[in-house]
Structure formats: structure tokens, C-alpha cells
Length: 357
Image (tube, rainbow, N blue to C red; front, side, top):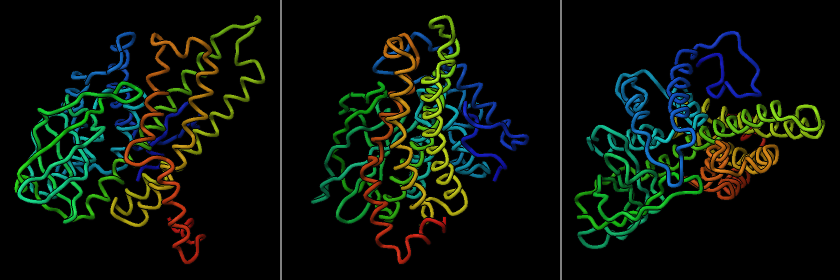
């Protein structure tokens, strides 16, 4: 693993003398910044897929970084890409394409088309010769080249590509597409896979959102620091006031706590794999810690920006609303907090659970 964290680069992060991932970070940052600058003042709700950014990701090999055979990349590198794009509010389904669909489809022997992909996760009725149901809050379904349906049924997990013709468009708080898909497919169209893959699918999604949230919080913090340095009040910058300094310090503490937990999750899945007990524990901790940091950080960011922070013209909403929305994906903070409690109660020695990862 690199000597530096996959999530290095935040405004409150101390500099590192050596970074083995410097070229990857620079590439992701360049692509993300180009997209961000091009969209300033043009982003709205609902948001649209950034086709140019996606083409750039495909051209550089970043679109399917870990799901391309022999690429040599793993979760650590994917975390750098997810974090970097989130810091620039990149409107692309990178997590869904690479960490989810690109990983799950080969387990079912499914060949995926080129282009952005997404995964619809749903419970379904598998009685008879058809599988019917509805998948809700499917990321980017209307904008993707294909949607991979993962159905949790009584006989396990079934996976297959589905037609998205019967799609009800919707979006999350940040304006990202979160569509509903009604499906009615022949049973033999979906292939049965190991049920454990369904658990890993959710874990992968939760892991990706933790990484992305840290990127969004770092961006919100960066905007807040710059605003308080540039905004003059009573003859001096806002950052000169003690109350503002205390608010920024509190924001820094919350973000670094979230970063440490997300870093633990990245390290755990890199070393042990997504299907390991270590990853289960680390992702659970990260989802709780990162989720609980979102409220305080986004609240302070908007307070420091004053009235301008709630306007569509200011870019702050691109990051605070994404962070808030992402806490609901692949399991809420409350869900994972309860799961963490069950893990602790089930452990013979809770201290061993904490220190073993």
C-alpha cells in the first residue's frame, strides 16, 4: 500500500513528503477540476450525467479501474478516484460502474456493454416462471448504458440485465438521479449466484459512499476556509474572529474523525477483501462515523457562508447536499449503528473486535 492515505488531500490534512499515488491523484484532480469548472453556474436539480467527464474516465482507464482484468488496481486506487471526483462533485456513476456492476456481473457470467453502468437492488416475488417487483432509488438508471438487476429472493440472489423502459425518474436531495424501476422478467433471464454476493454488494456500496462523503466534506471545508479568509467584516477577515476559528476547528475534528474511519475501511478491504470479517467491521464503523460527521460539518459550512451558502448560484450545495444524500445509500447511519452494536455484543471480547482490524 502507498505510504499515504487514499483519502489524503483535504484542506486540514498535513502534507506528506512522499506519495506513491501522486500521479493518480493528479490525474483524477485534473479531470474533476475540469468538469467542475465547466459546470459552474450551470448545475441544477435534477443533475445530468457529465458525458465529457465519463469519456475522459474511459480514455484514461479510470472508469473500470478495478473491474478490468489485469489492471493491477485495487480498492486503494479506486478510493483515490472516488474521493477525488467527489471533491469536484463529478456527476458520474463511477462507484456503480466499477465497484458494483463491474464486479458482480462476471460472477453471473454476464457480459457488460461499454459505457456507464448501475445496479438496481430489490426484493422480488420469484413464484412461477417470472420474477416481478420494483427497485427504488436506483442511481443514474436513466443515464446508463445498462442496468444490472440484483434480486434478493427466497432462493438466494439472482442477477441479470434488465430493460429500463418502465422507469420512473426521480432524484435525491442533491439532484442526482435516483430512479424507480418496475420489472417483470422471465425467471431464466436472471441467473442465480451465491447469496453471499448480495451482502458484499451492499458492503461495497456502503464503502464507496463513505469514501465519497469524505471527499464532499473536504470540498465543503475548503470552500468555508476560503470564504472566511476572503470575507471582510468589521474591517477584518471572518477567519480572524475567535468564534469562526472555533467553528473551523470543530469542522476539522469531525472531518478527520470521518477520514480515519474511512481510511480504516479502505485499508481493511485492500488487505483482506470486501468479503472478509475485517471489512465487515471496518465498513460498519466507517458508515456510522462518517454518517454522524455529515450533520455537524454541513451545518457549520452553511453557517459560515451565511445567506449566500443556501443559494443555487454558490457551489456549496453541490457538496453538502451530496454528503447528506449519500448517508442514506446502502444502509442508513442508524442501521449500521445497530449492526455495530450487534457485532460488539456477539464478540467474545469487544476489545479484541476493536483492535483486531
